[in-house]
Length: 404
Image (tube, rainbow, N blue to C red):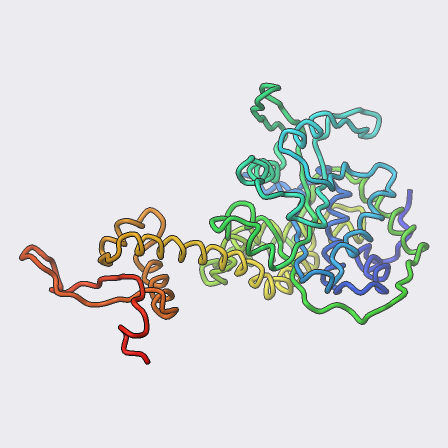
């Protein structure tokens, strides 16, 4: 079946969504996600020690209803669902065991062969609903992290079925949430961790112009579906163009993630992989030849750079949740002790905080008039260094501080 779109599939997708109010950046990433889903695990970039496939964890972030996140996602899903052989989509809250069971029973035609294919797309228009409040405790997040690597054979020990082996794993996620949920939905310790560092948070507060009657161009959608069927039929390993390989090698060697944003450190450590994933998708948007060209890599980098400025806001929301919990813990320790020296605090909380981090938290509590600090003379002849030490206690009130 020949392609019917002249030019890039992604450009045509942006035309298809042009009458809808969601921001351009939401539609672009929904389009990228759609093509990634169509490829499943059928194409790969061999990096030597590891392989890169087209799966991504993409999360749209904005305030409720402002940028119509779920509507943008629905347009993408309507294209995917109309493919000749659409990917297995999970859109409802699901337990870890149910997810594994469904993946283990999936069989698909690959040419004339029936193959075991544990590939799926998670379509979570309300990420908080899909994950639930116990996703970390019940092991779902841990499973999603492991499946992200697309192992050929993946084993899981269940309580009732013994060892389950999934073959040809591949998992892809397109979700949406709000800044408020990011603050409360992720555990504090998850900021920059294994799950969130794999996510591309696409943040926007700026919808397009309001349109009370957004029309759908069904002719455009039909072309998108036909060419997506062509894209889904592609098989094999990508090759690097000479210029593309040279550009990537130079970029990779000169990338110093330590000089990049501290907030996005976990994400930046995986940026090179995301760069390749998106370049793969951009390449097949244009032609069937599985070639990574310099132009695809440069465009991919631009797409990532565009989203990273506002991505910090999403990750900072999770970090603020973490800092709030840490402040509560520190305050409770001081309150229980009545008075406690700095050295004792450091020792007591050394499992969780460095001295520098603890000083930052203490400073926050002092400025918030939640605790007092005073310098007291150290007793005993065996003290090292200074003869005074810092002592912390719960804030004693305005009268004792000399207020009115």
